[in-house]
Structures are given as structure tokens and as C-alpha cells.
Image (cartoon, rainbow, N blue to C red; front, side, top):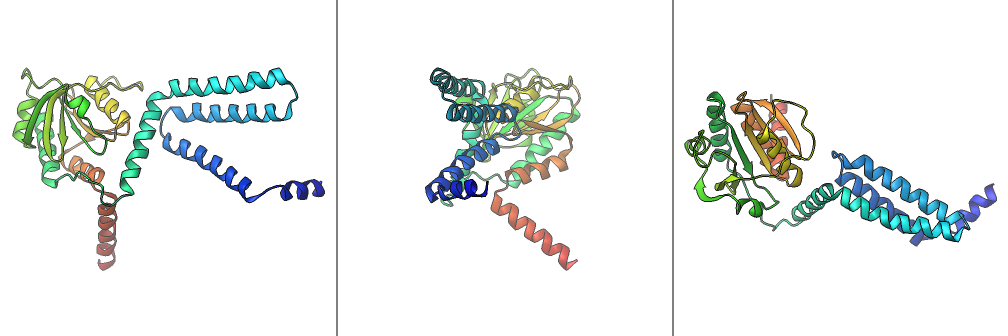
Length: 276
């Protein structure tokens, strides 16, 4: 037993260790990119099945069966790519955004605190009158294809303007407002609906659209329910409800702040706690 173990260890070279680490890194990266989605369990099952196919194919001497396993493995990759198409697109989008963050000179849109506060004030007023609203804040992932389907605008983010846009029976109230770089660039924008099933019966088309656009991109969507007046925020395909103007402002500022700004705020908070 010990002799066999030493023989196996003697056959392991630096290139073999590097090969194993690369395969493990690819699998870990894929699981990490797809975490929080329904595709994780399916991907795990596909990986386990692929490992079993490789194991059986390596130890069996059955030529036809080994060919069937190899052919089935290739077909499995195609099936997984088709089934996981939305999740794979979202994962590649995350990877692209991570790549942008590696370069300090890469352009990054900043959101002004005044813009966030104007959105919060407008949402609070709309909620008090039970006027539905859907506001999308574009981030790294471009929404130009969606913007071109709406009504093109180029105006500052003003609470009165947002209230006017979402006033019932106005031409632009049915759809989403898209904000880019602190300016309203389009209204009456049609968004994709969520692919996950939303069980809450109080969440209507606006909420499904908010979840849908955040499933596919890194955008942040703010929703005001026309039925209940509840303010919600969607991000990464998940939604947070029952917000007021203050909590909405704090949440948006936290989500829109850069990692460096978040670290600076955290250090400042720790410093204030120590001084107190």
C-alpha cells in the first residue's frame, strides 16, 4: 500500500500539479460566478457527471462504450450551454465588470448624492399618491439597446420631472426611466421580465421587469408599487421591499459607491467609533 502510494507520488510532476490546479480553479470560478442563481445545482450535477464519464472512460476497456461516453459528454456541454444561457451571459457580464475594475484608468460612471436624493424624494411622493414608477440606474453594463426602444431624453434628474413622467395617463408613464451618469437618458423603456417565478401576488409587471433587468445586467432598479405604494429596490435578480426615502437613499448610495469609496467610508466609521 505504502509502496503504491510512493510510486503514485513519484509520478506527479510540477506540470501535473499545475494542470490539476488550473482545472480546480476553472470549476471554482464557474461556481463562484453562478452563485446565487438556479444554475448552480445544475452546473454541479454536470460537473459530477463529467467526472464520472472521465473516470469510467479511463478505467474501462470497452471501446464502443468509451466512445459513447465521450460523445455524450460533448453533447452534454451543448445542452448545458443552452439551458444555462441567461446565467452564462450574466456570469460573463460579471467577469467583464471585474476586468474593468482591475484597471484604475478605466472610466467609471459616478452617481451624485443629489441625484439619489432626488430619486428618493420623487419615489416617496409617487408612493404617497399610489403612482407606479420604475427607475433604472445604469452602471457598467450598457443599456443602449433598451434605451433605443424608448423615448430619448437628456435631462437632469429632478423630482418634479420624475413625478410628471410617472403621472397616470401621461404618454411616458408606462415603462421605465433609465438614468445614466446622473442624467435621464430615456423614458417609456421596455424591460425584460424576470425569468424566475415571483410568488408574491403583490408584485406586478413593474417588479418583474425590475428583477428581469437586474438578472441580466448590473443595473439597479427602483420600483414604486401602484397598488400598495411600497418602494422596492432590485439588484442582481433580488428585490428589497418596504423602503422609505431615507432607507432608499442610504441603500442607493451604498450600492452605487465604488469599492474604494466603501473602504474609505468604513475606515471613517471605524475612526469615529474609536474617537467616541
